[in-house]
Length: 97
Image 1: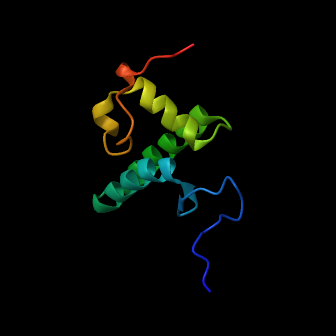
Image 2: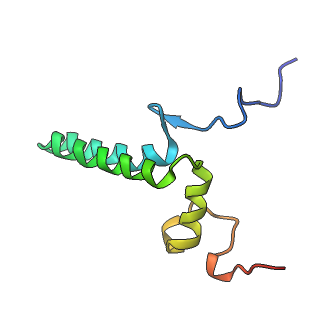
């Protein structure tokens, strides 16, 4: 009988695109693709590398979920309406003691 559950090899296994975590790939790959579509691929490759380094610097060993939480709490909710479908807007959340 086939297993109906899928277990990751490790607990912190995350989705990767071209070896990059999802949030790094979704920000750097479109910039690199725009550079390849235009006549200035080197400039856009440098910009994509700077974006990648800045994301890695912001995370500093923290996981992807930390970056998603920061985005949820501090950025406008219209940017992330597709990612956070089940959660209320961050302005309507309250800390309970």
